[in-house]
Image (tube, rainbow, N blue to C red):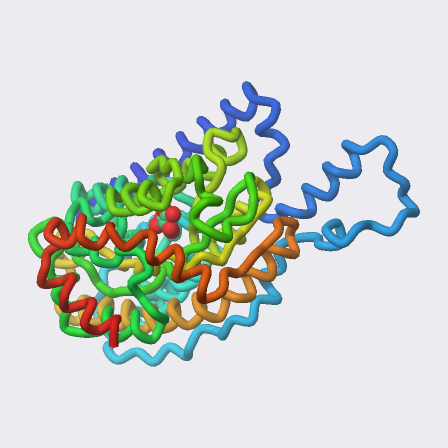
Length: 399
Ligand code: TK8
């Protein structure tokens, strides 16, 4: 714990270098200057449109898209965080900041839940423990941040299970396509004994896996056309997560997948290096993929969990009552995160469409066609993931 100060200095340095790097890139690449700033994406866009169009008639009624001034996150129908009721109030806690890196935006359900987690610890330790959030992959991607936990350069992160298969291969069960029938079943699986066992698999890896939350059902966005049947994927260059089961699934469906870290996706789409990507609607909105893709298709092809993680050494250095408080805060955060993730899902799809792209929602027959086409992936990966875990989970998801 004594070196937490130097760790956070290091993190700030890394963040500063990243910012300087981006600045340098912006100076070299004039296009970059067009990228709207995160706080006010659409406002900047609208202003750009006006400046760019010399024939624009100021008296003309703006078209529907231009009416939107920004992603209206304040209108999102999401619950306020629950009241904080400290079950434990540890005494004499050493003052320190927990650096918490995430891939997504501060405005995503993940970002909002980390804010709640920080408030929880702060309130129950009389302000001694605080959390500093580093959003938008600014200090690394899921794999790099997990590595940071293992090497002691970062205290917390919140990755998707998919890249974590590198550490715990059994997590690959969640990458099987069209596995999870609904969010309630996901809760049953994650909160079951199987879920506990999967988190326990991290023992000895340098990572303390605290809780399951949800990334959610993933949907395809792209710049070529609506995805309605597997044939529409033919040759589509789709970014997928760093996970071999996802690569295999999309190849099986006829697409041309490229695995890539999340933090590189926006600019790869912007530069046309890839045609599309797939993520839950809330991410497609809060990470601004609507700016760089013209189509969104509700394919619900896979449900991805998140795991809230802490560096194992960092956790073990705390006295027992603080560990209890961390466990409690993580559990409350899990409930809150899942709630707002679900509340935001459908609203985000509507926002995504309001922001410009064309959206189609696949019906049951269309989804079945995809599920059947992806079926061979199960046999291919069953033994690699682990027969037992696949069978146990299937038993819960197929009933
Ligand atoms: C964010 C990632 C992201 C995931 C992806 O760190 O990579 O597309 O869905 O949410 O975990």
